Image 1 (spheres, chains in turn cyan, brown):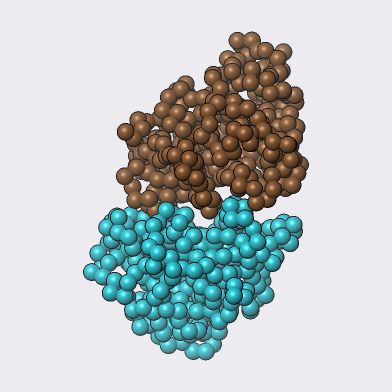
Image 2 (image 1 turned 90 degrees about the horizontal axis):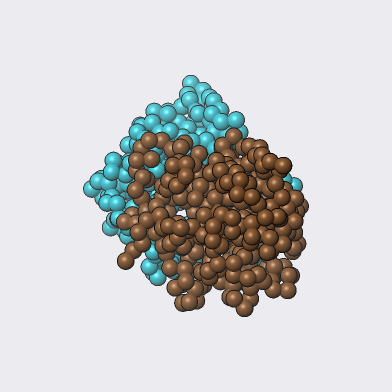
Length: 292
Length: 293
C-alpha cells in the first residue's frame, strides 16, 4: 500500500490515503509524509483510531515533542491528559464540559483567534498533530490559512517593507484582545519573544508571513501603529482564497506546519463534549535573536 | 436640475448628481437626499467645494449638529477645528502632520478599525458627513459596510440568538485593542461605556441591521472573552467583500453615511503627507436601549 495525497484546496492541504498511522511506519512512509508537509503544509488523515500512545509514537517520527507545561494557565493537578499533549477539548478532568464562566474555558477561547502554535516561544513549534476523538456536529471547524500564498500575494512595496521586521509575540497579547484577566504570576510566565515577520521554509525555501494573534508589537514601531498594520496583514492573509475549513469527522488526524500556516477553531456548542488532543513537534531554532 | 442617484454596489451606496450642496437647498432636494440615505445608507457627492460654514449649513438640513466633547483625547486648546466639526485629518493646530509617536495620532489610529461614529455615546450619531479637502492619492480610502445586508445574511439561529443582546461600547475598548491603554482618569471617565442594542431597526424603512463597532467590548451578562470572540466573528461576517464599498477619495468629495445602518473605517496611508478631512455629524435623537442605572 503506497501513500497517496489528494489536494483539497487550490494552494495547499492534502488528504492522505494508503497509510495506517496507528502502526509503526517505515522510513519511506515518514519521508513521503514529510514531503507532503513541505508541499501541502496541512495533511488530513481519515479514520485513524489512535490511542494516546500511538499518537505520541506517530508524532515522534517528525522530531522531539514539545511539552505544554508552563504555556497556559492550567496547574499540574488540572491536566486531563499526559503533559506531552495539549488538551484542546472543552472538558475537565472528569471528561465533563467546562462551565460557561470557567476560567480555563475562557482562556481557551483564544483558539478562536488566528494563530500559529507556540509562536510565543523563542523556539516555536514545527508541526502540530490534532486527533479528533469526539467531534462537534455543528461548528468547531478548524480553519487553516496558507501563509506562503498570502505572502506571495502581497505587493512588492509591502514585501520590501516587511522583509526585516521583527514582532513580539506573547499569550498576554492574544488574551488581552479578548479581555481575559491574567494574574501577575501568569503574566510573568508570558514574557514576549521575538519572531521575524517573514520567514523562509528550511526545506522548500518558500517565504511566508509569520503572523499570529499573539503579536503585540513590531520592534521599533509605536504599538498602536504596529497593531493596526498587523491587523491589516491578518485580514489580507485570511481571505477566502487562502483558507481551508476542516469539517471534523471522528478519528480524523490533521497535521499542520506552523511555519507555513495559521489556524483557528470556529464557534461550537460547548455544552457538548469535544475531545481533541494535540501533540506538537518542537522546533530546532529561533527565527531571530532574542532581546538580551 | 434634479437630483439623481446612481447605485454603486449591489446592496448599498449611491453616487448623487444634479445638486450643488454648497448652496441652500430646497425642501424637495433635502427630501430626495433623505430618501436616498434611507435607501443607500451611503451617498457620494463629487466636486463640492465646501467651506466649513457651507458644510455646517448643508448638514443642518438633516438635524442638529453633534458638538460635544467626549470623542477624543485632543483637548479644546489643541483643536484645529471648532467642536462642531470633527477633525479626521492627520494635522495639528498648525496644519502640519502629527509626529509618528504623537499621542493624538496613536489615538486616531482607532479609525483604522471598523466602527460606527459615536456608538460610544448613549445617543449615537445619525449621519456623518465627511468632506475631502486635501486627499491622498494612495490609500486613505474610506470603506463602508452595509449592516442591513450583513444582518439579512445571518442564519435564523443567529438572528434569534442576537435579537435582544445588548453590548457595551467605549473608546476604551477600541483603543485597548490597539494597545493604547494609557488613559488619564479624566479620559477614562469621559469614555465610560454605554449600552447599545446589537440589532437595531431603522426608524423609516423598518429594516433591521447589526449595530457593530470596534467600540463594542462586551455583551451584557456574557463572560467578556466569549463576548469578544463572538463580536469578532460577527464583525468578520459583516465586513465580507459583498457588504463593503471602498471609497477612493477625490478632492472635494463629500460622503454622507448613516451610522445606524453602516460601519466604516479608513485604510492605511502615508501619514507624512497632508490629509485634511473634515466631518460634521448629525446627532441622533434616541438611545437604542435603556442605560445602566
